[in-house]
Length: 347
Ligand code: PAZ
Image 1 (cartoon, rainbow, N blue to C red):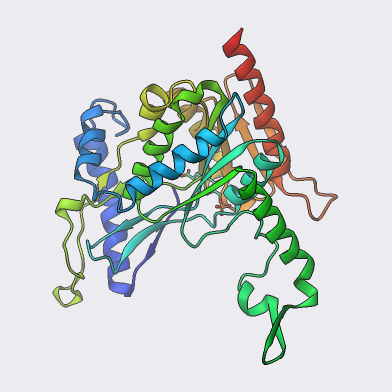
Image 2 (cartoon, rainbow, N blue to C red; image 1 turned 90 degrees about the vertical axis):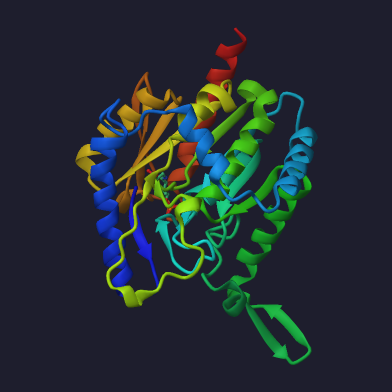
């Protein structure tokens, strides 16, 4: 996981980075001596993570939306949960500072568009403020750059953005009107994991027709809610030491308990290309997912490798076409694998 700190003052950055390193060390040596890697799934750890999490504020509303969406779209049709963006880790209960995981949300948004095109209903579980489906070709600051005022009583889309705005509005409205897109925002690691569990539980009845496509960048470490200070951390006391606990690996429980029949694709991001495939292969074996999409930070928009038990397939964007994106070919491959999985399931 690529860590970066999003903290208000520089002194905190140093403290947090030191803490991450310390935690890595203590986790490997101490807490998880069973595996030596700190990644053994202990159901107690998972239960205690959820029990100690601040409850989702809009839990009932999310469940209602999910059930409505899934029931509308039942009848053997395919449904995918696409996760997108990075989770944040608050350092204070009344959060002013937090640690963040890098992800623009571009992969998740582009993949969502392609899944809708392929006939899937998509539950888009995304980090608030990250890239949205159908908005990728809009300028970064759409409201300021897309519109103009010919006179004080009138507002219109600037001619240079007319096509992009028209397509974005039309495609998004069509996907929502056809009941093919449900967007659910999260910010923190607590919200993300609780919402993922709600979605998995709601999709259980869809068996092999459902898919998890886990492109979100999820924190490996967090500050347990109960050991977190309530108020803003004060800088007067000098350098900051925070102990980060390891987030229990939910992928195993997703596969074994939450949605055991669903097709499951996870992602592996590395910055060192030399270890990428080895790490992805280990994740494939450990979490028993159906494929791991391996990508390197700087080349992630050009190519990915789909690692599975049968083969490792390099998927590239079509370099001859400027508008081509890697997700066009990636989703074709994933949909094809999902079809094989469903057919094998019913055979
Ligand atoms: O969101 P984005 O388009 O900027 O990047 C996508 C990605 C690199 C976050 C995704 O492809 C990925 O690898 N997610 C999992 C990251 C991880 O190993 O935790």
